[in-house]
Amino acid sequence: MTGPGLPILDFVTRNFRNFNARSTRDALYAYWDHIRAGGRMYWAMAGAMSSAQLGITLAPAIRAGLIHGLSVTGANLEESLFRLVAHDSYKDFPDYRYFTKSDDTKILQQRMRRVTDTSIPEDEAFRAVEKILVPMWKRATQNGERRFWHEYFYELVQALPSKAFEGNPDECWLLAAAKANLPLVVPGHEDSTFGNIFASHVKLGDCSAGIVKSGIEYMTQLYDDYRQLSKGKGIGFFQIGGGIAGDFPICVVPSIKYDLEEKVRPWAYFCQISDSTTSYGSYSGATPNEKITWDKLTENTPMFVIESDATIIAPLMLSALLECRQQPDAADSMIKQLRAEQRKFRAR
Image 1 (cartoon, rainbow, N blue to C red):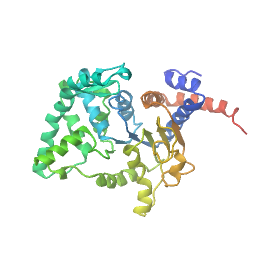
Image 2: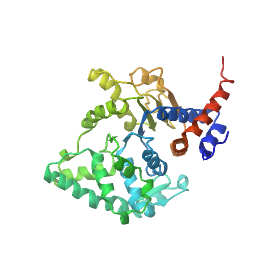
Image 3: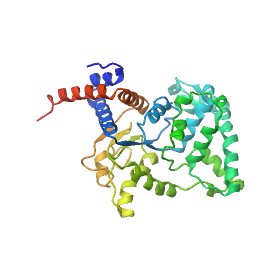
Image 4: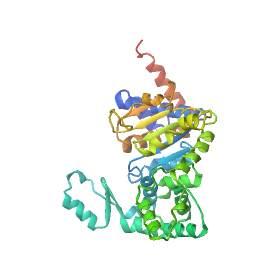
């Protein structure tokens, strides 16, 4: 079954047969089916995926046209930039599970901010970016400009000279998204390092809070983005983790239908990678079926939940999808062959 140049797709096809592995495989196939048919995909990214260097596969996927819009936390937005400008100054802590309070206090004294097994360097990341971003905010205040939160970062990352890069620019998803001018929302951006820094400058009086468009304005922009993206074969929803990064954009469908009272196409695909088990009252742990009752999905929407670590699953799926993009006919043949084999084992 092995196809030339399709080693990851072949590995998934041959080995991912049951349980969460099956869900991963089937979600991958359905993702490719949707893209192959001319559909689009919208990503919602929570957690600390940028610090975990998801950009290694996410940036090429954006450039390859496998991702057409994003909802990200303010932390994921800024941490993609941090990885670009301060990558060599990060420190890793593979033994973090055994740290004491004293160990973490030492990390603080080293002016590092730990994120699980790695750490963001304050001076090389936060303070270096602050020197560029704060003047941008002040100019916007003086000129009476208003922008979305991500638009300041889009401008900044594209204006940086290559000598400012410590990380590989080809692995910076923010730079790839900015170059593509990808539709983006950053709900709850106030809850981030630079959200706090911005608030401090508003309090000090040297920046106006009005230079950043609100979350409500993000939703009104998303109405327009969704209408455009859902044309043709529609747009799917691929979610990493839970929280506002996912909650905010998936609501655009029922909001257009019930609040604007306009016709709208439902999401054409849904997949969530989460380590949260099914639970009561937890969005992260809710099954996709629950979303049918909120008119976000329908009973015909391909739905997948992968209860696993997104730092493992997302790069694997993206790498396989990039192979599919490079050799679509060979990928189609491999997937078709497995599906034919599956039909023999389907319960009747």
